[in-house]
Image 1: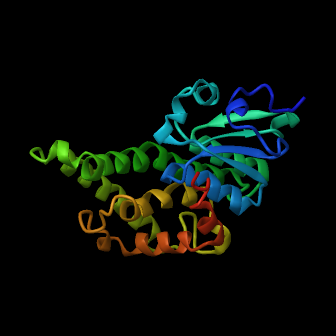
Image 2 (image 1 turned 135 degrees about the horizontal axis):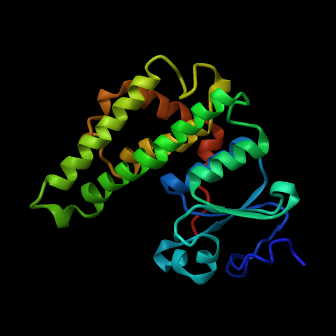
Length: 238
């Protein structure tokens, strides 16, 4: 019997190789965080596309793994103590993978918690606020055409968060420092969301991203990494 048979999600998305990590995702700013991390860590994995246009995320099988019906989610057949584990929430997955591999997070406690705090900065601030900005600026622009308040509110908050990042990155190449070895899950958590402001929302002018040159250079630096280039395309279009 497959070690993944206890997970109902594998009935809808069967595993071709049940011995590797199973990723359920889409190439969104949240989704690519995990695919990029998996590529950086050189962990073998199998990607399954959770298509929103088919409401895959609302199916009983997907909800059995993530009751919050959001991507990404994973199953690791070789979890703690060698037992399978299912996980949702991209921040939790990044921390888990970093601890599993001993990569992309410092070993010393101070550095570890410094990375985690920046991952939480993304989870609690960057993701929700940039997402709300994008919703009202692009996806629901017609619904707020006569009410500038939502776009202005989230524009202001998005620029404030970009300012926090600009201050952090003004004298360093990555969130944790200047050296290539300082690249961490903190960078992976945050940069896809900043990249999405222009790539997905086409809001570079509305947000005046040119005001944040250190952030822009950092996003380009992170996005050009081979693991990022590959991770942006996972899962492949179905």
